Amino acid sequence: MSVTKVRAYLRQWGRDQDILEMAVSTATVALAATALGVETGRIAKSLTINRKGGPGVLVVAAGDSRLDNQKFRERFGSKPKMMSPEEAQAFTGFSVGGICPFGLPPETEVFLDESLRRFETVFPACGSANSMLEVRLAELEEYSRSRGWVRVCRSMFHVKH
View 1 (cartoon, rainbow, N blue to C red):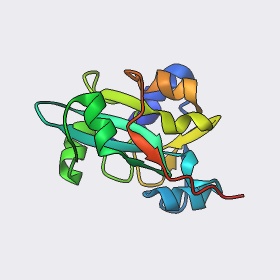
View 2 (cartoon, rainbow, N blue to C red):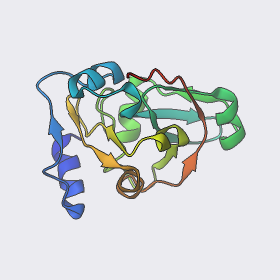
View 3 (cartoon, rainbow, N blue to C red):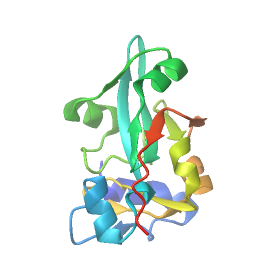
């Protein structure tokens, strides 16, 4: 999968031409925030997580947050284990650095972490290590076919003033 697939998927909402393709890498939260000139929290990172005895999940969280193992265990009933790059690509169809919550297989469970709620808009990746899309939270919820909001991350709040 690639930006082309994500662009085709977003066409149903008329957002296919809104994908930003940067001349520099946005493969990490820090690189993406620098490229856009925004605080790291506004980068919506996609965490691909295995859970024992169940299917993996994709959790979209604020870029300045970290997964809280205890909160994840309480919500999903198992200890989280981050997927390897190979597992993440097999699970989402995207390479690490470009994993996005759009255009995933219908059975993929996507959850949005509460750490995102303090922002009006956020920037998830769009299938490559240099693409992203600015979306309102309601759009992120709709486009990702989110299964709901969860609180499984703790915010680090490195806010730039």
